[in-house]
Amino acid sequence: MIVPIFLTHFGCHDRCIYCDQGYITTQNDTDIRRLIQRSLQQKEGVYEIGLFGGNIFGLSPDYLKRLFGHFDDYRDKITNFRISTKPVPLNEELIDILKEQRVTVIELGIPSFNNDILEMLNRKH
Ligand code: SF4
Image 1 (cartoon, rainbow, N blue to C red):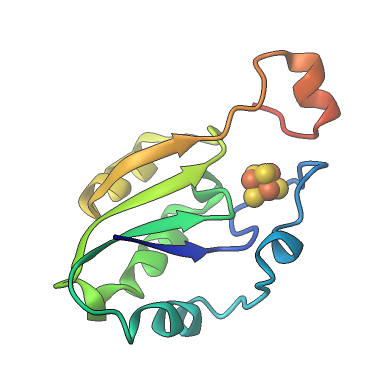
Image 2 (cartoon, protein in one colour):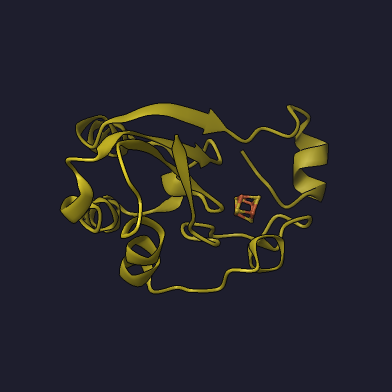
């Protein structure tokens, strides 16, 4: 089972023109600890966590570590994480943290390889 957690616009330094995560998910809670507690406290068995709705690669290494720290109370039930992210910015420190935290699937959001289209979308990568 995958438990989806929507980090609405976390790490998004720009707004892609087609995106409004608060509207799409009807979720605007920016208190990540409370959001995680609400999502996981009633869950039985083991599960994978899916982190969606933001740009994980856009978070600073310190923030990323704090984010995963909020899952510590549930570690015995979490098999692994998957994330969805824009492919930039990317650095090795971030990848090392993701590996340490048992992120096993990274879904890259690449709507186009055409720079003109990406420019129009305000989604530069
Ligand atoms: S990076 Fe993803 S979540 Fe952020 S604005 Fe673009 S599509 Fe939305």
